[in-house]
Length: 634
Image (cartoon, rainbow, N blue to C red; front, side, top):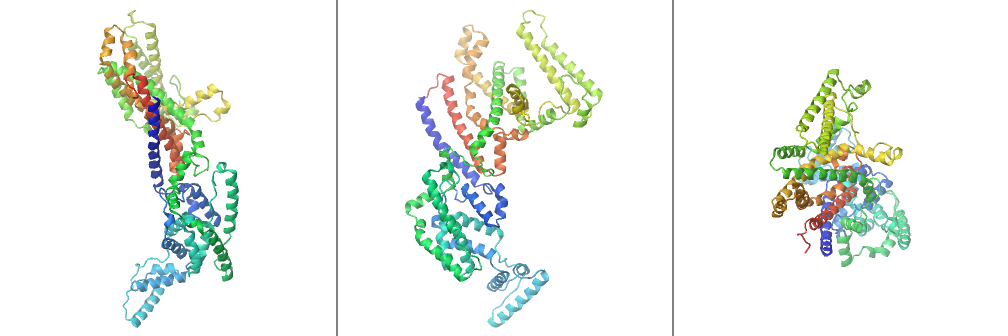
């Protein structure tokens, strides 16, 4: 058995790796970027240096500045950097006059095509009339040029694209330059020292003061730093502070520009080796400097990262939510098995009887009802309305006024009569034949009495719901009452939790009754027809002993196959039920994380759920041998 467990555990490692890869790719390739909901405003309003720096740190903290799976930035070409810089410079620095000249130049290249909208965007014109006048002037200019050069020009409205780049392209270009980090430092240095355009040189110097900074060791996990790491971080931080000041104003004179570039020249000569990569460096960067590699490096240390929203460790948040989901899900699982297995055994023993057929119809009707529908229905009928009472009676006026219910006295009387009739009818049916002393056993009388009380309670509840529209019998949501852990004793607190979880557990339980009971029924039917069961009966054993002692144990093997899918529910909880009843478990946590694109939290919950699925499958296999001696691990 030990060898079998070791083999299965070794098989789980690559399986878990593939599962984590799939989850990682799905989340990172989804529309939008992780944390976008919480950082969108920051991204769209990056107007100050502080905001720029804050957004840059946010991306570095969550590795959003790295490629997803493979990193080829060490081989980026100068032309790619030029294209990005050109987009930003044209948007931020070109004047209206320069854009107008660019428009006229494009019109010349394209046969004289120019537009009113173009002139509105690229000139001082404030109205279509002014733009039309400017257009007429351009037409005259090109006609004059045409007569001199012998070329022919045509002028058409609304065809020339606007010279200024779209805002979306500019934002993408800014993000790409930020994300490339140190890999484009050589190209930025060349632009700053060699490019003929002053705006290009100024922008390259500004980016150098950011991209040339070295990253601190374990910057966002100070508890993982050694003393040597802290000393090195102080040295790196000092260097970063110094080079962050090596910039100049856009209108600075030539001497100030040369002074800054002299500092960059000395620095680059000293540190150019950082940007020369050997084959081994390239392989390490290609596989290692990526989001997935960083994420798996954290997983090996059992670090699920921190939340994009409140910067709290994901593992701490999961453990905080875990007790709610375990209480809810584990309780519903126990109820499902306690109810389903006896129902399955009863259906197998009474196969094809009227009781079996009725039970099957009822279970599959329950199975067909959506959980969200039943949850909302129970919430409406049993949580909002006049207070429930054992015996139907007219609610106090203040309750009717608060709930808006309209109740007539005849409705209350009809409810009372209905409860009496239903209870007496069931009692007469249950106690029929009790005149025979052989059937009048104490346990039989007690069981029938309990069923009669149950019918009385159910009919009273149904009568009040029909009369009042709804009753207030259970809380509208939550895991416990406000202040319960402070004001109640331990027993009272547990009772309060159970009171709040009645409706959620009903919603999580009823759907599983049909599935588990059918598995139990089919498994037991196969066993009942076996030879050893006929032998047990031939020996004179009573039917209850044959079924419970000999048949049920082997007939429950199919149910064990479901264990692999049950453990994840202890972690995942029920998203729908936790939302409807406002239970702060992992299901609600997962939903909120997906909505806010807190991808570290989503990956943490899904990975733990996947791991528990693999553990559940292993437990299922081990359980086979414990239940059925014929199964071995060889």
